[in-house]
Length: 154
Ligand SMILES: [Zn+2]
Image 1 (cartoon, rainbow, N blue to C red):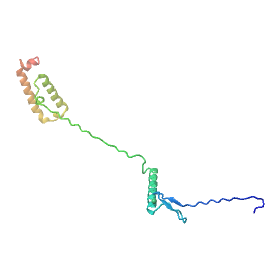
Image 2: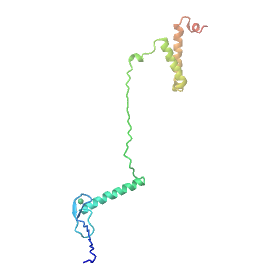
Image 3: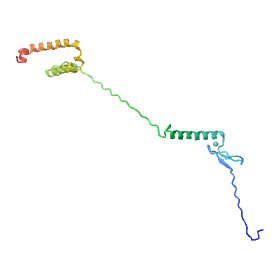
Image 4: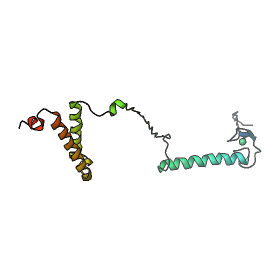
């Protein structure tokens, strides 16, 4: 006995792992008390957890080195719309001009094509064009009272 009447109370707390859940499936795994406590219930679940961890590490490394992106996948889509317009040309449109005004427009277009378009370079057609125009002049000469001389004020 302690002569001063003092007493000492000692409390000793000891913890001992009884079980832990599998890091993959959550199944309760009893711990035997020997060796390192198991983190997974089976080798298959240990492997699956390792695959996920290493894949995550590879992804983070690729993102860090910009070999991979964390951005969402984007698509660029082109759209082609084809409009088809069908124009029906009536017989009336293909009739030759029958007024002086319409002929003047046609002849002005012929002159323009001779000056600006390939018709001016198609030399083998020019003699035929000349004869056709000369025939027109002859017709005009005969049609007008006094002929071309009167028209030109001679
Ligand atoms: Zn498991």
